[in-house]
Length: 422
Image (tube, rainbow, N blue to C red; front, top):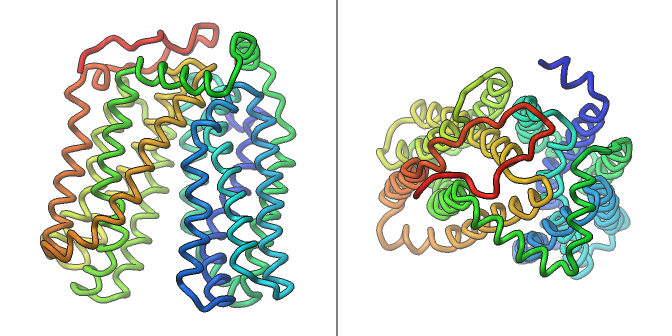
């Protein structure tokens, strides 16, 4: 199977471009954090810079999805990567020349967030243009492996580079990876049926706003998509902020600061191991499996809430990583197999937006809740609610019975509506 994918030049160039870009992106947050803190000695500045990047990313996701369905995705990806190379290069230049100032760095990161809003939907939609439908799960498994491996290696490499050479060179390396990735993506042709479908659909549309409305119509017409998205939204609401904020605090109380590093490493190893496993795993109802395994992400919260020792927490984090990776591959593959190609990026953008919007809400809520009810009680309840949100969609036959798509490339990607009730 490996050889069948990597024998295809289109996928080789795309995989190489993603690997390079992911490595740079995994290094950038560490370098940027130290760069801003070293230059300003002000945590408030870092908060502004991070918000400047995240807000346009969320605000423009729907526009990015419409653009990725309206124009050739190869063009969108190349333009976005070149723009990201310029913005990160600008930040690096300010740091390397000793001219750091909050305003220009925030503006550059704002522009980088804008570009990210166009990159994400295009990436979701381009994979079915690269490989046969029978190889989508394997392709997503390999891409997930690359993403998870860089999550493990990137921050450590960035930390070493910051110590040895400083934050400026680390940001400059991220800019270079965007530039290199754009060159690799330029080798793609993507001259298949999806381009024809996109061009035909574009001829019938007049505005981006209309495209966004059509995307919402398609999103609502697929019960398994909006049910799954609602599930992820609820999980992110109760789980992400709780884990990020209370996780390290409560772990330190129970077993010391060093344990938290082992917990994060164990989760990373679980993510990587499961993405490799998904390359070979064959199941009839992939979405059902992904929804079941998403409940495993609640395990570390339940372990913390039960005041269990460090080995249990590390093991729980590893299992949670396994579950999260299986869920990611299953969800991406299901979208690519069953959502019509000409609306795939727009449907994916609604999925991303509704899922991610819950994260800052949860992050802002967890502190007051912990003060009112106690941290250990909050993580225990969050674990229970997260697990419930993960498995509730299985009550829907649209989710439970969604089959693997047929391998014939000549068939339409999916009917407009998946049969089933909620």
